[in-house]
Length: 207
Image (cartoon, rainbow, N blue to C red; front, side, top):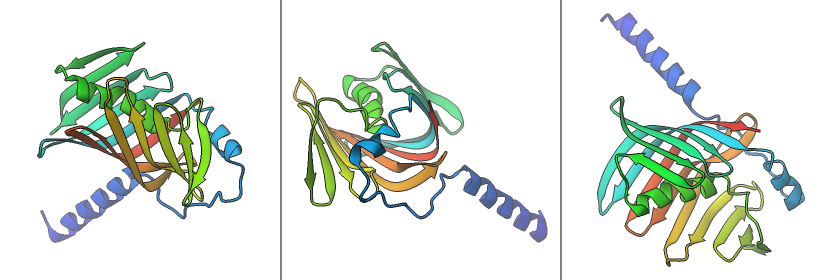
């Protein structure tokens, strides 16, 4: 390949990757707005489609892939994970019935069902006590705690507790924008010896 052709190919690749990446721009400040008003703007969202990179970690080992996710506010979802262009895992959840190929253990299922649902639809939280703490709004219910940045109204971290004693921790970072809606494009979910890191490339919100 000639030097000129190589340069054109490189530039085309850069433009393609830039087009696929979530938009990063100056983050607006919502400081001073009513908390209930900002959350109400998100409550019309009934579903999310996302293209993302995914990293699975367990006991020091790592598995990486790319994924396509379609998830509804009810928790119904379809997740396909690809490695080297081939379908490596498929998971569906409908009305609480979870199917996966290959089969997954209970920890991984919990992260990829309830964990995914509550980390993405973080605003859909009921019966919580509201308080303010060190620059964050803290929403606390019997089984969840959610910290929301007071300036950006984006989640910073979340804790979920289950009846069997398991604790799931979620950490958010790297604000991005799609469809004029801001979200955190990097999410890390930890449960016992498992961790899953999501890097969102594109997110579409459905009403």
